[in-house]
Picture: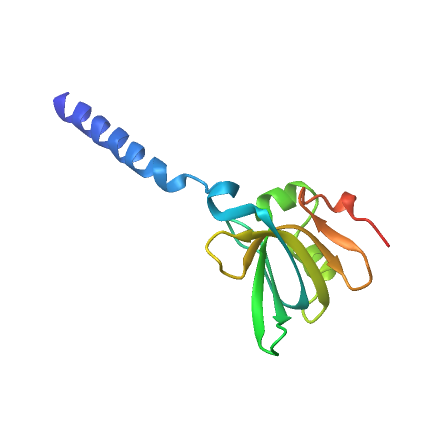
Length: 139
């Protein structure tokens, strides 16, 4: 009986110790709401991964150098709940396509942002903060 109780206590202790590892970062911890950013460039990748999908865009800087910006969006499961899937995302945002991503810059100064929307060169906004494809607006 005592050993069963000890195992139960140890199990609860392990669960409680692991709980902080599942904590999610907050917007305010990583991004600066007072630093809106907008970049235009060529799509070089779309990462459909947890914890957030990321659209990677190669941006040409004023000095001719290039920087890859990552526009972090919603997690895949949220996009799926709103009607998206990987194939729809790939058909709406194609590799090599010129897009503009707007959002808020990372506090750490890296070329990363929390994306609020993504607009293609044809003027169609295909991704918005909610992740709902029904919110797509044409030109």
